[in-house]
Length: 190
Ligand code: FES
Image (cartoon, rainbow, N blue to C red; front, side):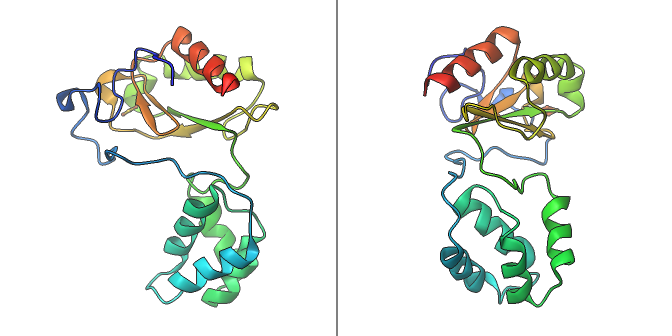
């Protein structure tokens, strides 16, 4: 990936002291973005079955499906409901309550922009607004060429270098218009 003067790339650039240790959300070294693969009902049923006996299985099942496919389509709802003896409305409620459960396949790259307070105070709302307008998409949507999905996040533990984001899981600090433009170009190239 091109060098965007990233302040907080995991395990390489950011000194630990630069990260906000007070945040309850940690960026784990080596954490990877899940890849989006084609929805496969047989594979989904296997995953659901492997987690169905857990206490409060709905969340582990949905997390496992997201991990495998990168998104959770509506087709998953009846499968999960049937396996866990829940109503479809209950599964739908869980699925839509949590922002992390993407409902459609993401683009080739995923940019998460922090929308929480510290980043808000450092111009994040204007940067986000301008980026989305430039791309012609809204939060959670993907550019028509499939290059980039832009999602919101709520404190990434990078408050000390806000405004912050994640590009394909890599923390990026001190975002500005130039860095975002570089990310767009990078996403379109690869
Ligand atoms: S508010 Fe903490 S990283 Fe944005």
